[in-house]
Length: 515
Image (cartoon, rainbow, N blue to C red; front, side, top):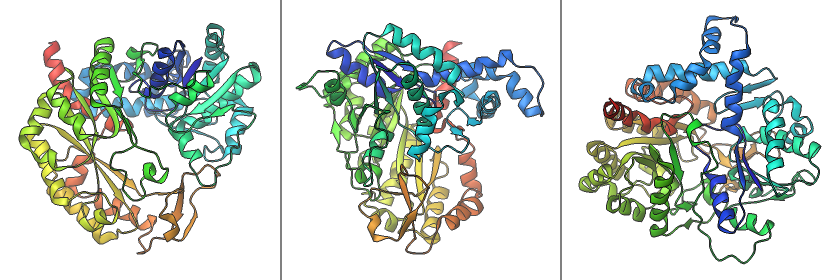
């Protein structure tokens, strides 16, 4: 069997989804082949630079094209991460160079893919991408790479893991190529995006005849069943990264992604996609998670561990202090009173915690209560201050335009950020989108947000009149322009954002150690 991670997604670390599936298959005697077509495809496009003439229409493009290979190399050295301006120039120039190297009717970047009039929100457009795979800019890559793997594989089954909209069009171009050239191959589609599609209330499979099996949610058992292995009692499998190119990713050292759970243990926040889609919380035991982590660290030798959980549980956090991983790590967790304990946070830092991502969403208590966040704003304040004092960076996520928010509450969020400007490490600002499968959407007047049968969100009439145009105006003219906020935002790594943010905390330490 062949498992494929398609373009385009942030190429900073190996894909955990197909690694987890590989672990399940190998546990039951099936040895799959793994293909990270994302990093391989991007690298092939980067290598096109050598074949291009040295002239260009403007100075920026000329510089970006000349330095594509050098900028790719610089993102894999720690020196780049010791200077944010040097880093930003490397990322932005590399992204621009890749865009210009793409000679199709497409916009291609390090974490973005658009192709002409085709939309990943319309099944008809995905089918069109499959009908004309040669129009995809990755066609020169996958039209030779996929046949190589098929020749090596003993099983006529290929699985695609699609987690982001930016992967959908390329995935279907690859599927179309397989359908046109290998008629006996069975094709399986899974991943986070596919799960969201299938949980939509209006879902009707539009890919019959193109895709043989669609898998929703946790894919291991379904995949094993397709491969003829049934009645398995085990539900936790250790990921297998051995067939992925650990040394090729855009980071100064190997990053090990690992998830100790599926879903979210809180699972009560209004409008959360996890809750809206009915995804259950499925944790591995704390003992199993720690065993996996220590084993994988020994095998892969990572520079840092990325814990992928929607929220790292309190038992896992406590166990990490008692049984440190021996390497730095970071991840997403909930704001809780445990993180107001300075002694615990110092222990957490000494156990390798470099950064915690926190979904605050709002600095207004009324908004938090209406969203059922289970967060007290004073506790949040104390958590951010305590983590800063302990030496742990924070990446704070804020959400604007929720049904209970107006500009008044949004200004309370601005005030909160200003008061904590010295403690907040990084900020993520997002506009609220109403999930199409939200149980609460019937309370509002809704309309089509995007034209497409695969749209994951719906537009709605804000009950207090604060529409998206007004929210954007507030963010652009007031929030981002505040000096305290702009100083924080200037530190945010472009494109890679939280995937690279913790590396800045490590850079100087590692450079000093290497010297």
